[in-house]
Length: 157
Image (tube, rainbow, N blue to C red; front, side, top):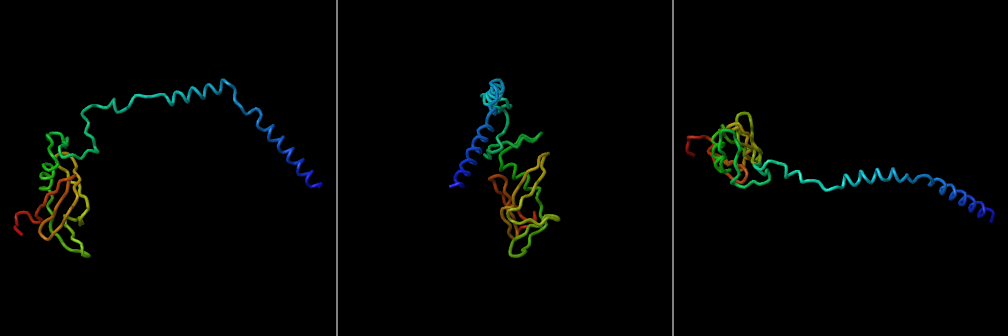
């Protein structure tokens, strides 16, 4: 019985201490108004930043074939035309099989199917992907266009 009374007293004293702890924690109306002003300024509607961009920009997420290259001194062209021009600059020295996979030899580089290659052409770097490698030819891809080139130009397979 005495333990119940002691426990009850401890709870009453503890509860009164917690009640006095919370007093004086509410801010004044002036301080609350400053917080409300900051919140309303942050939540106020703003002008869309896209509306301030120049109108002639190309959407980088649109890989349509009518997109222009935007090279200085070059009027651009379709992806197919660009690929035909830059594929002529890819001159591999040969191909070989390594571990059951075909490898395209391009100088010191050894490229597999799926590897990318950066080709500088008329002041712009273009990224092409090796799509296929055979004994006598290879296929490169630029965006959605593909072209097949011989490994040794000028020699018929």
